[in-house]
Length: 295
Image (cartoon, rainbow, N blue to C red):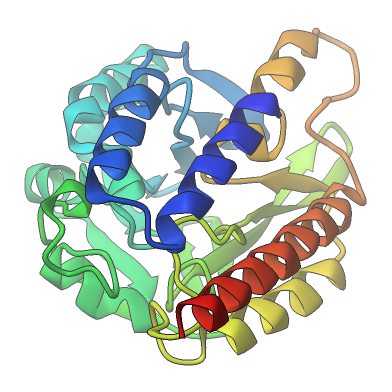
């Protein structure tokens, strides 16, 4: 968690107006972890981890092909393909690509993989223009945060469902981190029990401006509604866009045949959301104070 907290502290500087070079320096340092390899593995049920050491990417195996959840930065696309192959899957079997949010560290491989497979890309309605424009909201000209544009085949809103074969995921609108931030819920079989899984989009402030010239309209209300929503959800398995969100590496190390799956942690989502809300309140107060001081 220390790595994540340091990253969020650095990102908070950007949202209060730090020089662009600081962003470049931070990304250069962070990219080392974001692009570092991690051995793919079966996480729980029909969900597999195929991401890097710093960016989470998932494959969901269904009776009618594969669902890919997010990608990573563009330079990691080949690594993701290798990880998929290591698990015995074929890239050509990817039929659906789901996005949690339209930031470059989770969208970098969409255009290439979509071209290779012909898979349908599904994303939150308010993130559609970002994906098709390849830009960060409120900072459209910043090429450091850009990514290859990609066509969205289906835009979803709260409660919409995506089904492939025997697997269905439900979209939950959890805006704030991005305007169309979408968390995906599904049920998996864990031994003789069903488990509710949430691929949580994100709830960090990160690069976002909350006041003055906000990154997107209604951003403060978006964050608050998201925290209230996820704290009330009954989830057994929390997954997220970065491994630090749910302690992936430590839980992976605890996995043993015949033992309870360490990724099953009821209550973890609510606890995590509460910490995010506290961090948000601090960021909002800090940005508000900085704005008032500037005026």
